[in-house]
Length: 140
Image (tube, rainbow, N blue to C red):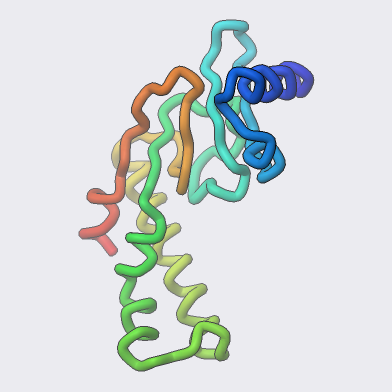
């Protein structure tokens, strides 16, 4: 299975689908057990909640993470009060913002039936991935 994913990455690079730099950034392509199964291209660290193994994905969604992060009350407080991100309070608020995003995404994922939510995800065939940003934003 791992060899098939590596061969797929090499083929995509040859066809111009992925640059060598993209491969080195930790992108993974995954094939399902069936030869004609879906191929998801993700960075491992981009999983927000739900399944994080690309071979298991069936109905993933994506999120505009930067937009959501800047919209959290914790980040707005840091900006309004001029709290440095590397200060003790800034680190605490940053972690609280991440926790809030995770909990909200997990709620939306369960409510709407997604298998996972990602910062960035794409499918090798170019199919559209649902964006849940506008569903998460009002709940924050």
